[in-house]
Length: 637
Ligand SMILES: Cc1cc2nc3c(=O)[nH]c(=O)nc-3n(C[C@H](O)[C@H](O)[C@H](O)COP(=O)(O)O)c2cc1C
Ligand code: SF4
Image 1 (cartoon, rainbow, N blue to C red):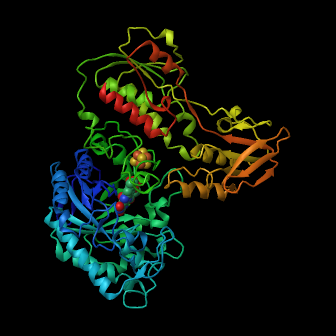
Image 2: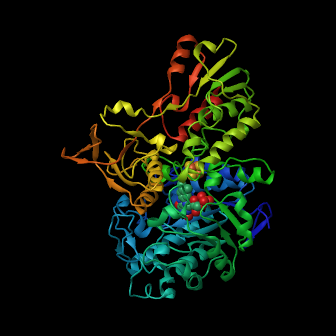
């Protein structure tokens, strides 16, 4: 079997076997889908997904509400839902809507409701004490499933999927950890599955198309059901037309999406077990699914393969794969997709580090559809880091004559240093950026440092992408010696007992801490934030903290380093109380902040008008801004 082969899903003939799985996007207003959401999903259908499952996590009842969700139970959502269905059908793809009630894994306060759940068993990832559903609550939520499903049917959706993965009252009913009821909805597997089976039955009665079940094969939570329970789990649920496999709960969500911070569970064996037991089509995925994984999943017996982040990273992945063309790869960073929806960037929406169009599909055309320039220019790009590379390839694709000069002997800039340890998947970004520059016939000149006086008037446009300088630890004015974290990452030696001062507050601190621990040092990580690397994206933080603590790192939060004396004594000050204490480590390592490498830009800006700067040369930021700046300038030039 292969991805481009036609498939069948309970009477639905799907043009291929590549599925775009649900993503909560926050492209929602007042509980209704927006045009931006329809365009976002349609971009994946246009890019080759035969089946789109989404919008994700649409709500069936007002007691499960929140700003990120579509209220599918509300008739007012019908026009938006109809637009979504039409947008997908326009590309000859099918669309199945996903319904959920979040139960104990969200909040009730959005709609002045108690948090309805199987029992008063709170999630470790939420803060409210849930209310055990009464029979009247159960009946009302089941009615909600039927109403919401019927709304999807009326809007033209081809089917409905019930979510029993993370953020789902259905999974919570199945779970011995969340469902401690002693009535007919609690107890053994068959009783705990009663609510799920009733929901499946009510939805089946409300729609014409297939009704699927998106099911966590294990919760991976203490007290929850595990992979060993798959036979009992699958024996207990009935009445679905297809099974879609996932893993985890809200509390173990960082294992649902294998990222740079958490070890991912093996899913291939559990899925093989599931396909043996289920007499219906199965949609399979791995903790991260790339196009290359499809064969292993088909061998495990699945009928369709679902992709999520890969299709956020390149919406045209499936059509490019079918044509054997190169596609850009997801780097599993979770820094803009999950972080955009769930993280510190609360109030944002889904985005992607390596694909600035994601979440902005109504504003930005697909790169493959961007017009060539009407006025080709000779463009000099200075700097071969991510911003310079992204700009250069797109500008050249648009017809500009682009030369890129890089001072060092290789491309990639600080990506090379970043793509170590947990950030190893970032190597894909460096490789894909370089491949795009090569495909676009950019003239690349390595070992070519540029100074202001060597930039002559033959260039129509100059783009400065010189990046950022390393942190300068001498600016701390300490008497004693300190070591730069960047030097540690490049192999500098340190003593047995290290104090790592976290001024970076982000991933450099994590990488340095892990490197020091690997070198065999004991490490105390001191941060003026609540704990080290606190500004790391929320989806990545628990995994990083776990990795550091598992190897014995000690955290001292809310402290700054006031002094390092000549004999190496370190004075720490509590930033909240002002109290001080001392430490005597063998080595002090400082993970500092970087500065924009902007001198060349400032010099050139004095000499000419047609000079721009992009990426870290404006201000050192995360990788997404390098892609964004480079791409935006290239689209406009
Ligand atoms: C930003 C984001 C939001 C998601 N929201 C949902 C959701 O609401 N419902 C759901 O079933 N899965 C959701 N997922 C999980 C994905 O459907 C998928 O299972 C997961 O990303 C792992 O697959 P991948 O490695 O192909 O990305 C979400 C994933 C991302 C990245
Ligand atoms: S933000 Fe990172 S993890 Fe998310 S889709 Fe983009 S590259 Fe993948």
